[in-house]
Image (cartoon, helix red, strand yellow):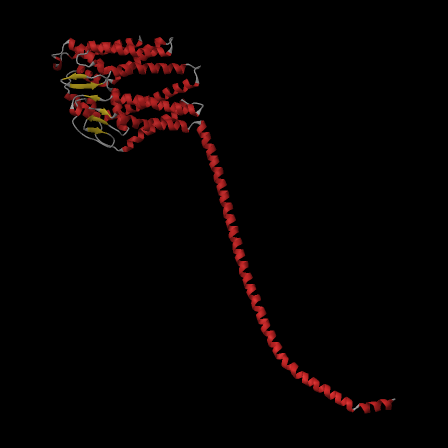
Length: 462
């Protein structure tokens, strides 16, 4: 019943607002040919537009989603689902078919120029997002739930934090752009010819319904990808393609200059800050659960941003105005890399397990470094000792060779000297031998000649 109630309530709100606008503007010259039946049909067309459908007029299709109304419908379905708190969680998903069927019925019976089947995507997404939101929030209140449910709930909460922070930052950027381009926006407002305060309030109210669209364009711009105000007019931090724009006052806030790629540092800084906050708010004891929670949060962020960017695109005519808004795929990828990825890295890098592993790794690296330095010093000392030993052996070999050469030279000199001495001594010996023989012969002669006197002396003495 929640889906059916929300669909009827949303259709009634859009129709009532359309009728009030018709009654307040019926005095305007533009509304002279408009009847209450036309206003009622316009209310049906507006409901189809909220669902993301298109309307055809003069063979041209128009699509512009009042994103603020769609966001309020999601909140409405979420509130109505609280009546199913006593039933199983899966019963909340029955809001989807109830909302879709009711939306088809209302679109087909009340729309004047809208194509009712084109609003099917929004009719499915609005109750589905609200149902998932309700189921996930019920997990967070169940303290007896398994650990897996807790990190799943934490992943959705972390993803929601990333989305809310991104939307808030984009709102600030949109306000800054509006203040900077207030003069141009006021000029476009005057061109619309608002003759009374009611006319001005109507114009402003219609633009307020597209406030999330303006924020999405701001987010696409500061992500570096940019957005299109026409098929041939891109606006980004590095590119400005001026050209004719539709008479919408909010388009006067479109940046007229290209400051440069440094703008991309802003979402990166936001992602780092969200990572620090998430590491404290959504801490899990196990690093694996922390990783799974961060990946789930990134997926939630990517899904919501992609839907946000798609709902912010529009077609206000043919040719140049056939495509306006951010480039959905590139803008989503850029915001995920600039916001969700830094947040995931910070949450994992600051986890106690990661810090402990890093500390152990640093200690291991230090010990291995010391061991390498010690082995290197030992190798150098061994190489120095080996080199010293080789030098000593070379010196010993050199001195041994000198000694051997000296020893080999000394006997040769000694032999020459001895040979000379022996050669000089032989003549002397040869001269001495005849002299000795002569002396011996003389002594023999004397002895022979004096034998008698000696004998006579001996005898006389006797």
